[in-house]
Amino acid sequence: MEITAAMVKELRTKSGAGIMECKQALKESNGNTEEAITFLRKKGLARAGKKADRETGDGAIGTYIHPGNKIGVMVQLCCETDFVANTPDFHELLKDIGMHIAASKTRVLSREEVSEEDLEREREIFAHQARESGKPENIVEKIVSGKMEKFYEENCLLDQPFIKNPDITVQELIKQKIAILGENIVVGKFARFEISK
Image (cartoon, rainbow, N blue to C red; front, top):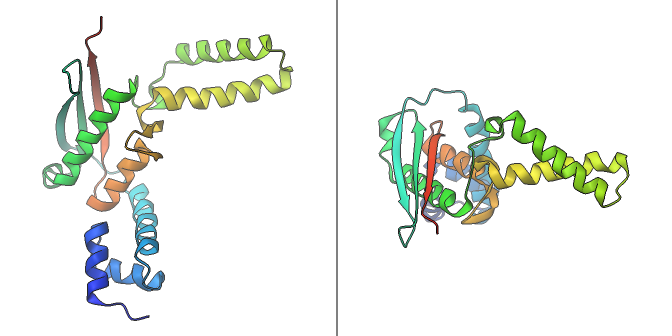
């Protein structure tokens, strides 16, 4: 199938990828735009993984105030250069992460930040619940393991399903932006404030 300039332009608009990358993706997908986008995303996510060790000495701090002014979030999002820190895509990501934290009552950034004390307490509670419901000991450990995954998903920002698209996690959302912007991006710190009665 012939790949036209109009097809390449449409894919560039939808994906943000370069001309040659779009042309290659359209060739790989026989001109199917949706398959080409999937191809570009897979390629971009693979490259994003390689950027994970690069220094993030720049970035921006953003705030999100939920309508009603009762919930507010401050997020530090880091990248490699001020050029990327000033792009609309970067600021959109910053806002989306702030909105997500406001909605999800996120406690910590990642699994590594959950204290051993908290983990042990949760494991004990889950094991006790499983035993109380009459589950055999060999099943208890599997139940505890499954419930711990759910615990991480509920409390750790990077493991949470993204509120605007629950098919991906916040970590995957960040990787998608890394693929588009070409730099490592990490969440530095965040704080969530809520006024409640």
